[in-house]
Image 1: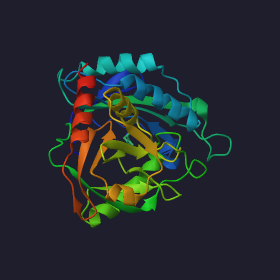
Image 2: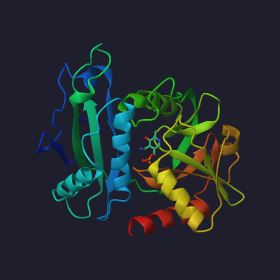
Image 3: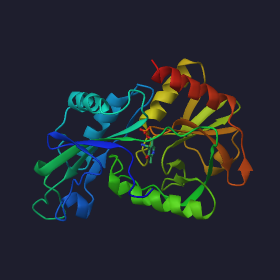
Image 4: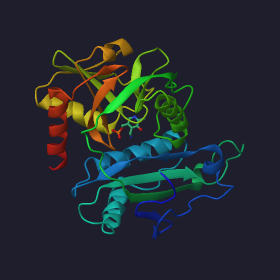
Length: 286
Ligand code: PMP
């Protein structure tokens, strides 16, 4: 993507701004030392599934990053409703609430929580078509533990590690990369959570604090269980995924999407994936 941004509206300092509005200066703590958190929700077909949970999570992320979550979930939701008026009613949009530290704290590298700033950005982002599918490979990079990085926040600072995993896998001809945790169990993809299906049972890595156990993951697990599909959260190795009958992903951006190649093995979108996707869309459309 270049600087040719899709239609974007951002609420910052009490007003809506169009385009790629500047939010930081050269002395801003977050611009220098990475103290920012965000979340990503979506609007499409006039619905915003689980937006309240995404707003609640950005507030938890702020606390984990040592920031002050100064916007209530209700305020995030009201502002989003206001912002959505600026787009077509059925537009496919990404909704990004964000907090960051403006000033350093007493020791410079620490941030002054009292200087927390925030914005809410909403922009056009088409829903990916599930038709093409995704190819995945095992990344040589790993997810850090909470002792090594702020893995209990959805923080911008975690994403350069995911970015280098993506760059490395693209070089080898894959769309996305599976990262293991420090124990060698599969954690997640660089941009989404990962599910496998074996003998009709859906399995996904058990949340262990090293990866983002996503809102779409939790929602999809709940919907599948309600529909009578067995879902197991377990410690899983890459060999388990390579031998699966089906693979699919969950995440806010694409919701429920099929994986059509794992390493050199081609896969078809399977019946459990199809059911999970249908269940998600039924839920989203309310
Ligand atoms: N893992 C990573 C690294 C992600 O960026 C995302 C997308 N937010 C997810 C998982 C999925 O999380 P969620 O369903 O909450 O969007």
